[in-house]
Length: 129
Image (cartoon, rainbow, N blue to C red; front, side):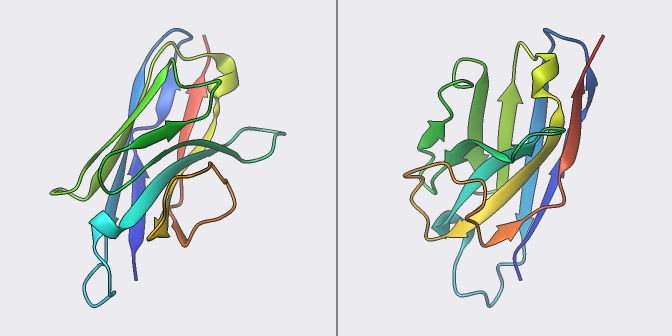
């Protein structure tokens, strides 16, 4: 069973930066490898619908929500089975619970906050002065 664990959240002042990490494990006997999954970052802000932020393919190709692509950068390290989200120039409206989610044999053709096979428990990001 694939497991995803997020880390790196916390309290940051407006204008600050954070890097979130997502560690993947549990590929043994799964029938697929880390390179076969696309990883999405999704966030749930208070009082708002869950939002797809970004997606990365097994080859490292990325897709971003238009409103965030100038401030957020996603990357992955297949050897370490890790995915990262670098968030810059953070705003109070970036506050929320950030999840990483995996899609087996996905394509990152679109950002869908509800369509995934596995999801982590999330890490809280709070942007406040």
